[in-house]
Length: 207
Image (tube, rainbow, N blue to C red):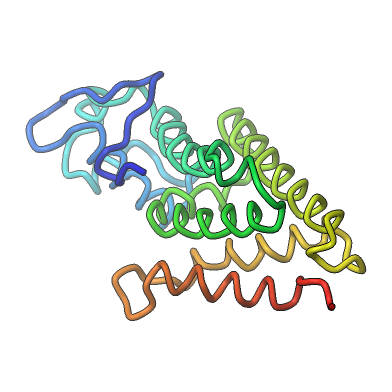
């Protein structure tokens, strides 16, 4: 998966702007500002102040604040959606596919933490936000389908509604953005192990 320094979008390819900044570095700072102030409360003036450049200079990189938001959300959602296209997510036992998807979801969240944080804080006030929320719901729906399939196969317990399981699992995973600190003593791999252990010890069918 690309790092945050390798962000690109088919709709808005990276382009060189004023010296010292390219579209990617502008986007990284913008996402940080959006997360600190809220997207709605962030003006182009606030972005310019944080970047140390004029508002007009920002337009050398992106046409609008909304384009920055779309690039950021595409980066978060693209990482999540790509998980479901991997062979490990499309073939084999449903519980193994579910575990793979959950592990990879944690990995994407950690790798793209500021971007996923922004996604999870959306309020749906603009068309860009509503489109992103719809893509997120589609991702959650497909994971719910995996949970149902694993339950039907007999590998997960039958007494909990799959929709409840989905909400609880993603409630747990999504909460990571509020407390996880990259570079600390808890590695992304150990974090994923812990999430899987907690989830599946409670979900596996009793023999």
